[in-house]
Image (cartoon, rainbow, N blue to C red; front, top):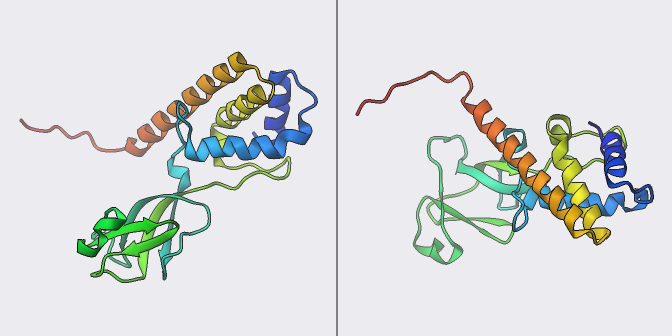
Length: 191
């Protein structure tokens, strides 16, 4: 589904025809839930969000959400280990984040290769679409409907849509995990 189709679905499901002006705001709030989660709402992480970059310095790439793997440049077999910032003076082969700045242990140097989860493009035009909209549009629809329910002070509606959102994210996560194993050889393990 593209952005225009998702907005039409939200209008129809909420029985509200006066929310067009709210879509920029509720989209930002819905994507906040999608990328960062809430107390009872899981965040979305899937293979389509995997990105990679070579960092010459410690600045996070645009759209960065969380690291999957950090290695010295050109050495993918030597992953660095995450350590809290206060442990870095004594750490080796390690990294941490100081706000949005990547900090390496003293035995490491830039450049490093970063594999990470990144945000997908936010829709602007009605014809815009990203991977989640195309493959799991119910995530966007239910996340937007949660916000509509909150704006209408309809707790029951918002709670129902929050449950739909969590179910949609769990289904995508399950599908993504199964897809990552698809085609793998069956191996029997000995005792």
